[in-house]
Each structure stands twice: as structure tokens, then as C-alpha cells.
Length: 122
Image (cartoon, rainbow, N blue to C red; front, top):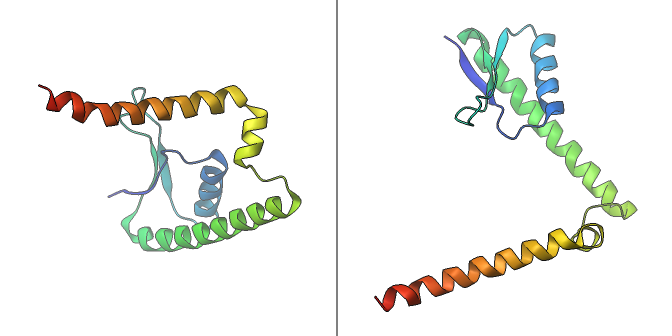
């Protein structure tokens, strides 16, 4: 019976390609399901045979450790070079978006603060 190895919700395409290649390289049979139109299912990568599941999970765990370390190294390099994304750089690049987001946050906080007061008066 097939088992889900990777839910594709919010997974980057390069990661999906890496997982496909990894499974193919190690001779693990798999198939993919695609996301449904209304977001009920996000799709996934499924290991076809139960006998391969433990090996696929071990490979996936190793891959995720390597990917995390690579991402951390890339971030550290970007910080050293001064090219890392910061609040200030986002504010300079997209001031309207940042201001509107901050206003939306303040509006929501105001609503959260007002709702108990409105409920107490009823």
C-alpha cells in the first residue's frame, strides 16, 4: 500500500525536483498526486511499496538536514555580503506594501481590543 512521503503544500519546486531525483537515484518507486482546484488537497509524493518506506524516510531526513545546512550557509553568506533581506530593505523596496501591512495589523489589534468592550455592553 502506498504511503505519503512528502505533502507538497508550500514546497518549493526545486525541493520537489530534488526529492524526485533522490528517489529515482535510489531506485525507489513513487508517484505524485497533484493539488486539487479548491485547495482541499495539496498533492504529494507517495512511495509505492511499503518495503521502501523506511529507506525513503531515512533518505528524506538526510536530504532535509543537507538542505537546512545549505540554506543556513546561504543566509550567512548573504548577511556577510549585506545582500540579505531585512525589514529596512523591504521598506525601501516596497514602502506602500509595508505601510499597508502595518496599518492592517494595527486595525486588527484595534478590533481585538474593541470586541471585548463591545461584548461587555450587551
